Image (cartoon, rainbow, N blue to C red; front, top):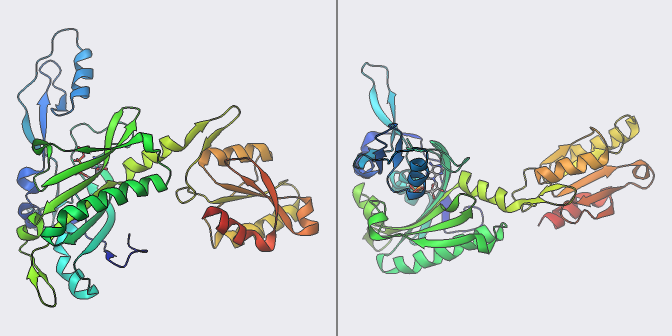
Length: 371
Ligand code: ATP
């Protein structure tokens, strides 16, 4: 979004924020989940998670009764300053507000014109009632968000546009179409700021689960912070279309989609852009200094361009399997032929096919393949 588009700028806003931001944004009052308590064991749950409630009821022999739902605020408090009592602040419950409170700085320093977007990535914190499902729901997590500022009359158009773009993005990085769907929020489900909300859901082993929300936030936030857009010939409060994704959640789902058990190996078929290592370099034998030296030189050169792993333990087969399991798309082996003709074996993670490539051509070869 930030690198390849000219209508979107990136920022990195603060984590600890003044309480006024969260009062104005409505989070102090409205950023709540409905909490209920099991009257038998006093464990607490979200009233809107029917599956979790059903599962819990099964753990008791007797019929479970629940307390009435009460609003539980998710904001995490922090106490700052050097004078007692310290002042209350909040850890950001969504990275979103950082885009609004920096709105004027962005407009005046980057000269963007409506329609334009502010994108960010960073930690957010919520005092979740029931963290769980691996990294799906935690109290500290990473969000990636776009706030896209538009004219009111074009809000619907951009809402549809970003829905399409975002699902296309997940698919372009390898998520299977059949594991993805949109789910529209009924009016009563929507967050306090949303005029329209559509989740992108993934068919997880624990059921269809949201991992990105596309929202039409109207002019809710900019109005709440008393902000307007001052263009060359116009001044107004833009509407905001938001794409708010979870990095941890999408990483979990990319991993699930990529995981394959084959006859004799486990392989993580991650899209090359997502693979932590793009290439691994091995000397055929760890006890032959001339091979190790040559492999090290290749490793040092590749490292400047790609995230490159090194492995000289065990035999080549085991090293291949270790890299397959970590999702490394290519392995480069330096053998005795390398010392004679300056070629190496490049082995492909998905097909397991091997080819000989000139060392002088290796970087270009990998760049081409990884693209
Ligand atoms: P949920 O209903 O699952 O609690 P939400 O609708 O409150 O999620 P949003 O406020 O729309 O979530 O946040 C945008 C995105 O941030 C979510 O789609 C999700 O990917 C991510 N996210 C929100 N809460 C968490 C969390 N506790 N752990 C990990 N990721 C989260």
